[in-house]
Amino acid sequence: MTPHHNRAFRLALVLPLGLLAGYFLLLLGGQAPYLNGSTLRAELSSSTLLDAIRLSLVSATIATLAALAFAVPAGYALARLNFPGKRLLDTLLDLPVVLTPVALGTLILMALNTPPGRFLHSLGLTLPFTVAGVIAAQFTVVVAMAVRMLKASFEEISPRYEQVARLLGCSAGGSFLRVTLPLARRGIIASFILCWARAIGEFGATVMVAGTARGQTATLPSSIYLAMSAADLSRAVVLILILILISFAVLFLVRLVGGRRP
Amino acid sequence: MIRAEQLRIACGDFRLGPVDLSIPAGSYLTLLGPSGAGKTILLEALMGLLKPAAGRVLLNGEEMAAQPPERRNIAYLPQDLALFPHLSVQDNILFGSRVRRLDPAASRDRLAELVAMLDLEGPLTRRDISTLSGGEKQRVALARALLPNPQLLFLDEPHSALDAGITRQLQIKLRQINRELGVTILHVTHDQEEAFMLGGQIAVLIDGRLQQLGSSDEIYYGPANLSVARFLRHQNIFSLTVAERLPDGRMRLRGELDLVCASGRDLPVGTRVAVGIRNEEVTLIRPDRPVGDDLRDNLFAAVIVDIFGFGGYHTLVVKIRESPATIELNLPNCAFRDLGLGTGDKVRISLRARSLWVLPPDDGEPRGQHSYMEG
Image 1 (spheres, rainbow over the protein chains, first blue to last red):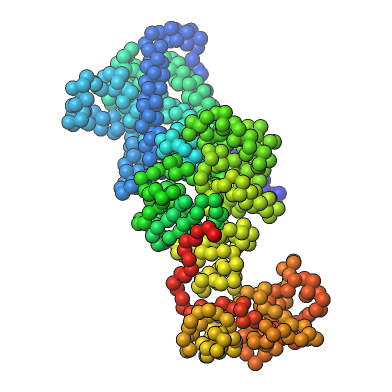
Image 2 (tube, one colour):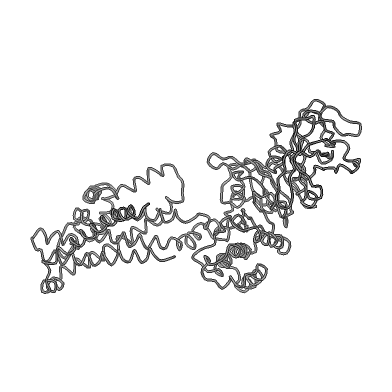
């Protein structure tokens, strides 16, 4: 390759990268004219905004922990066990990842009208227009993603470690806890962070199931939607700014965790 | 002490067995076979990591089907060693003692003993196992396997990633472990030289079937069938017919070569057989020397058609005169230099009658004693 060809190739790589960076900076900077110190102070002291932030943080954390509680064993089972219908089940678990959240939210509401749904209702679990509904919607959206990531994490770990641990005296469960789980630590943390980020930005399914009641079921994303539909630009901009700051911090954390050795 | 009876294993399309094998306490058995023969699968079935399709595994006379791997007291050194990357060297070695909740004081004594035996004083202080050299990793894995005081040690090609010098040191250590700690060892390898060097009994596994079990010499000079002969790189194999039973019990064979052999096999006249001899057993007779009595039977005039050097020895390919047969023989370098041989030279060679092995040619059936006891 001549130096001239080299330059052209580099340009072909760097130009799209530069254009994308510029586009994202434009998106971020476009809100600056709508932002001023006094509205920022006013919005930050409003209780409904603080409620939305609190609800988003709490619901995303609970939904993500619940998702991991299912995804760690499920991902491990998909990575290690062989059983009839595994491929079908694997595909089924992928569906929520590709389905639009609005459709998922609708499906959750419809499932409430089935015998298992009615049974849960009889136990006192009410999802429509409740915080539990927010958590259920976020859980449904992120759990499949968590299973996928953890399955990949467990597949990267050679089963040989578990076999050696078994012969050194561990039970099947013991070898999982003492060897596999510590080796999957990085994958588990990374999937927690990404699922949490996905949950905190979730809008479609949450709105379908829990609505957007201010101070009750309104999360950060649904508050942005509410502010825009009321043409309250300055409020929307403050909410977006908070969402950006949280998201950026989380994504940066993923890079930090991902780059560190186990 | 460990015994497989009619063990059959199905793994995907691969079928292994039936295998009957018995390894007495304190012995060193090498399981030798080409890659894909099923050696690792057999180990996994004995350890309880793989459920056999049929047959049983007995440990000290006790049926093992219901016992999980952790209750079999077998130590395992896999090919990739599988040292736990999240633990320090010391935590790796002590893993088994902690899991089994062994007495900490006894474990520390055992650790000290193994550290001295395996020269691990330096590596023991390392926190990160990725900083260890290949040989150190292997010794750490050995110490980890031996710490819980196992009855049996299973090794699955543990030297595959090491250079020859380090491999030799570890082979010597393994024999020491077998003798001094009294651990019964089952060592899987595809390397014939290693199998013969380790010196114990050898089991040959090819295509999922145990083909032969015997001492180094039995396997080396008397392959049980043609698959074993070919795997052990017997180069001189001839297809002949039994022509005559001689009064002294020997057989005269005819075909591409006319030979007399001292095989004890009772084969009727007219039987087609495969006859072979190892390169090292072919004798080259100097032109000016008289021929000894034991070399007269199968004496041939030949011409050297090719010569290959292998560092310590030379392999000569000779064409037998008045026969289509070619024969390979090995000469140590000093003998090769003294004789000053070159291609085209006329030589005499002898195939000692007692060095020839004889097999029915299409003998697919594995033969030989498939279990052995000490003494």
